[in-house]
Image 1 (cartoon, rainbow, N blue to C red):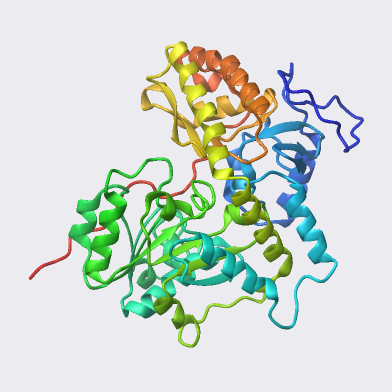
Image 2: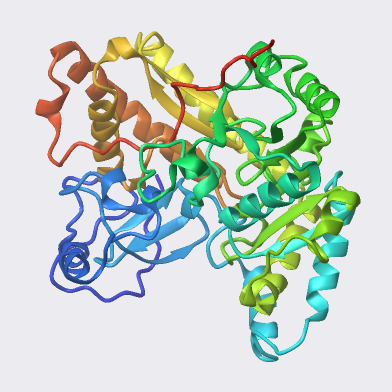
Length: 460
């Protein structure tokens, strides 16, 4: 069993929970105090939906984290947790990873943002060109939404077309969020230019593509694997139609392979976008692609930001990518993530629960799922989260692996699952999962995963 690390945060009003089978749920008094203060001044109270209280059961889960080290985090009340959220993706090596932190400190001593360009912009772009197959040219920005929108804009400029087909989550900007339920404030004209398609359904795409479609953007995979030949055929039909293919590699980039999904599947898109994993938590985003398309940013397409050349993030990104490559981190994530995913499924089988719950996805990022027959999915996820948090694991349904997750971490997590799954089984068999909850049920995420709206092209 993992022993608690020494706490640097001095809390005297209660006994802090640690990474162990605790007798009680964590005391979250200070978290709740911050939350009450936030309600008075912030609208909304979270900067990222996936980090907000709607995704962590109110009354049980902490709301604010204070610090992290390796694969462990501590909340503002001093409770310690093993973290499988990886800051919703950016932490690929681990919290406070020494090599990256040292690169940041060295650059900090020289300055952060300057009045002219910085040499690290060139050095990072050269490094990206070495490792990402389609990187004939590189553009640097700050967030995933930035580069997704830049990719769509340049694709429209290059093709002279307006419509976009998308599959996955691509940020908060108008062109994409128009297809979700949170589309207030977006003009109807913009909502009529973006269409969703179902992953792995090549026939519907072929039927709908026409000479009005500028770009097709998708996450190369989320949890479902591509059917044999799907990505290859997708690239071909886009090429034949004059539509630019864009890979959104926020989650796949630097995790499934150093060069991302395009390297892993050997399918080269026209454009690709990256962010989360490449700087171990520092804010940076990358757009890579064909020279003839990217050339339009020189004079015709506008996409700039003051902080695009911020040097701390550039230094962190270079250090992170070198570490990912030198230590072959994707292979590590695959190995350790496989132990966790396969271990969960084996435990479910031993308890006769395989028909009700399983862990799916690629090893570097897997997800625990529940079958419809098990009951209300949000209630089941809430109960699992409640019991995993009691055992010192900050659980949100995912295993976002990082290089700091150790064999000991994985063994402990599986021991927690072995302890919690019988509770899940009992709750499911009772027919009243909600009665087992001590906090509020989690909220649904708006993310578009169904109700796909592309239509066959009209022929005269």
